[in-house]
Amino acid sequence: MKLPLLEEQNLKGKRVFVRVDFNVPVENGKATDKTRIEKTLPTLELLISKGAKIILGSHLGRPKGGPEAKYSMKPVFDVLTTLVKTKVSFSDSVIGANVVKMSNELGEGEILLLENLRFHKEEEENEAGFCKELAKLADVYVNDAFGTAHRAHASTEGVAHLLPAFAGLLMRKEIEVLSGLLARPERPFVAIVGGSKVSSKFAILKNLLEKVDHLLIGGGMAYTFLKSRAVPVGKSLVEPDFESQAFQLIDRAGIQGVDLQIPVDHIIADHFDPNAKTKSVDKMGILDGWMGMDIGPKTIDNYIKAIKEAKTILWNGPMGVFEMDKFSKGTIEIAKAISKSKAKTVVGGGDSIAAVNKAGVADKITHISTGGGASLEFLEGRTLPGVECLLPKEGK
Image (cartoon, rainbow, N blue to C red; front, side, top):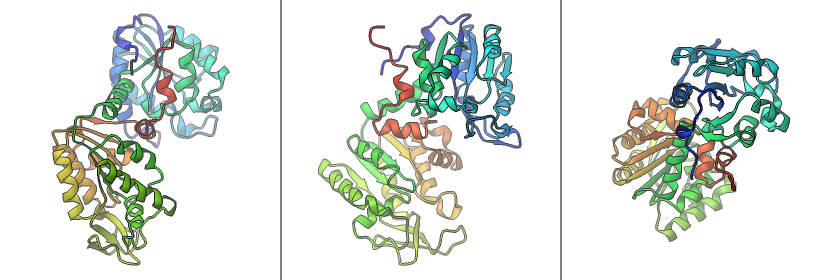
């Protein structure tokens, strides 16, 4: 994927609109996690060093198409001012003559943070007039918000057609890592896919089956696979509409020579509660009235064996109900095994990121994707509108 390089552009004195992902948790008017803000600092520092005038736009939360105080970007502004060594201003407006004036009056290397883009319903509608208003703020467009790249909104796609458009450093790294994962992985390539529902992951499983050597299934979705093979699953989470597809995926893996593994033992509970009674059961199945909550010790050993032999590892989705400590062992042990691997390791999805943080091994992962839904759609092989619009246009 040939993206024009931001580093090679002359941006001195130019107004640069940067779509960032500053959708951070806010409590009592304070941002409680600044990770997403920190992730885009390399792009901001590059633009500052080039003497650009920087206008930042982001969404925060899900306002109902109008201003809501609890979704204001002001808590983000408070954090941003402590992270950069330049003047940072705040605009209560997103579009209009006043904010255009503020963008023009920025000094080189200075930053203007706009209020929440989604205070305008036209943002999510990708409305043409709103795109033109945003474009008035800048001479150049940069998207550094990979997590929003699967949305064709005004600030993620529409404006890119009106200005010279580039990927920020974080956006480009995400694209390069995930593209490389699909196009030229070093083998053996092991994918570990968990989470609660097959329905939300089936497209990625089908696509990965064409790429990987080992596909390890965990989490609630595993019980649909087990049920499809007539293994008793008690009252575990099952999606009946996906049983036949799960059955066929196992068959296809066998035909293609892919080692698709599903859990051979389980930690089960009598009800969904951190204080529930628990047992460990083997591949004969889960007892009536009980539910699977985590992969068991034999499954952990099987999966770790594949992980140890891997040269490339992708992990998306927990192995069990890891937010309850009693059922977190499978997920934590997989996280630790991945961290000890000498393979190229890529972790994506909010729960998987939370798991590597909980296990204290985040700094040992090659790449932690900030993408969430965008990462999933990219790995499914879908075209992301927020990426497509950054590619060089034919004839230019």
